[in-house]
Image 1 (tube, rainbow, N blue to C red):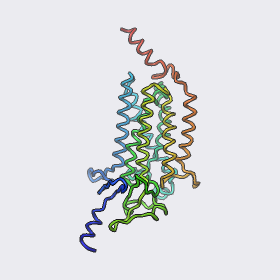
Image 2: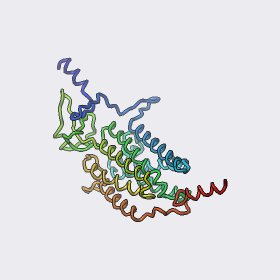
Image 3: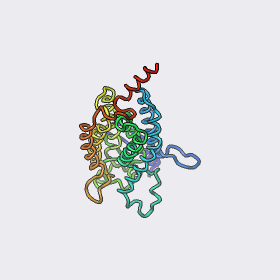
Image 4: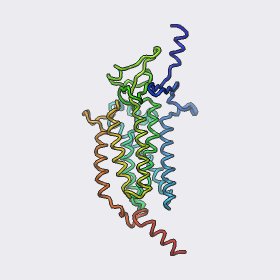
Length: 315
């Protein structure tokens, strides 16, 4: 092998979007090392998404005259339950990966957090949290729900760095190439392997960048939810609308992925089944929940009006 050819092989990009003309020469899942411990982009992006989502929710709460500490307290404790829920959900449906080495369950740096597990845990905690503090759950959800897809959109790029959560083979506009040697064999299908591309001696898989599809879909969800909230539409029903919008996108995107979790050995993808249930639940709740509910609870119907009247009386 000539020196020139060796140089070409070494300099081939790690990631390639051939139809967009985008090349990323080096994609390292490790952001930096601290005291000899590798810090992964996966964790940084998820953490950054959570921080940004919390900040935006707190700003909105302050803008409507509420107490931002109600949001920060919820997020501070809720995140712990979300991470536990997301991990537990993933481990349950991928138990074969952990039954022989149960300590690996606690190794979060390699990925393995399921969004739906986090959402379920957040809702359960939210019900407990709002009841304990006499808060109106649905009014609080109006504040928090539009921020959730912000964290999801940013966090999905952690999958990009981990070279996971991609779809099957495609030659479409957004087709993405990863070096075959850098991808886990567990995420590869026969169809993907049948369409590998070799360039200058380097073998690539060419797949759907489903992490990007979901991030872009979430941007659309954010815009719709914030617009509805700003215009005063669907009061106390923003969370159910999130269920519908996110569920619709997830059903489509999950069908493209190669690493889906399946229901007890069946051909049914768990996330698609849950998405369908969320859509139905969201539609039902939109018609069932009353916009003038939550009377007598903090942030419920009439709360801010009564608060304003009390202030005027004191003056």
